[in-house]
Amino acid sequence: MRNLRYRVRGVITTVTAALLGAGALTACDATGDNSPGPQGSSAHRPSPKPTPTWDTSPRSVAAVGDSITRGFDACSVLSDCPEVSWATGSDAGVKSLAVRLLGKDRAAKHSWNYARTGARMSDLTGQVEQAAAKRPELLTVMAGANDACRSSADQMTSVSEFRADFEDALRALRRELPRTQVYVASVPDLKRLWSQGRANPLGKQVWKLGICSSMLADADAMDAGATQRRASVQDRVVAYNKVLKDVCAKDKRCRYDGGAVFDYRFDGDQLSHWDWFHPSKDGQSRLAALAYRGITSKEPLA
Image (tube, rainbow, N blue to C red):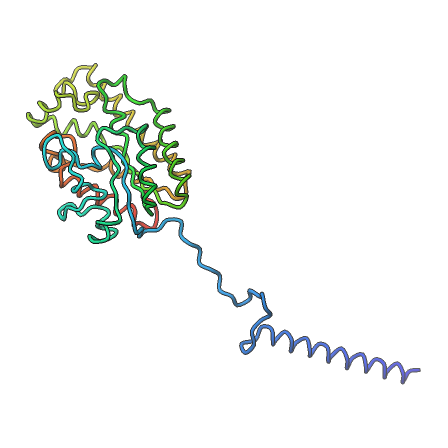
């Protein structure tokens, strides 16, 4: 019995060793350098690189907004000049965003300007619907100045209406183009426009025609009422920019400029010498540079 026990134990030991050896060989075959793993194995399959949410080199551009994007008063008095638009213009001196992104030849056929002089945020949805027909990879938005620039501070668009109008415009875009990127420029600092332009006698005379009266009326008045009026307009612009930032943050393909336009310390050279309010060609070029930097940055500007 003892010999039988030894023989059985020896057989078990031999078989176990053989099985372990086979298992080791199998494991080596499955993971070794000379043989592929089983079908469906991900052991050596490289992880796919995630597609970045923001493309820094879109291949087509459409613009919506107001008179700034139309180049109003940049070339001649009281007229649009879209060829110098910061967003889609062809003027070599401005070097628009579209030209910087696409090159001159491609920009001529793959950029479109649907902005309208005098437009407010409530007009943006219609512009967006027009732009969507072109299926642009990038949509630029610069709107809100006319919501603050009214005949009086009391007539400014409320913050809640401004928010609702901007949200409606983004929804209209997403219904047609869920993957189009949106770049939102902040509303300019209207109080700085007043402080820069009021030093020019011609500018103040033009302002009397009714340009942004809520901010620019009685340009030399420094009484409490005038000071409070300008402060209320400035506060409304700041509130509008917060709306743009907050609403844009909810859309993963929307990028706010981080307040770049509002914060830019422009001077008289960047203002139209026709009205001392709208950007000159130099001002348009500065806007294009700000937008290009914001769009081509790997991370949103703070």
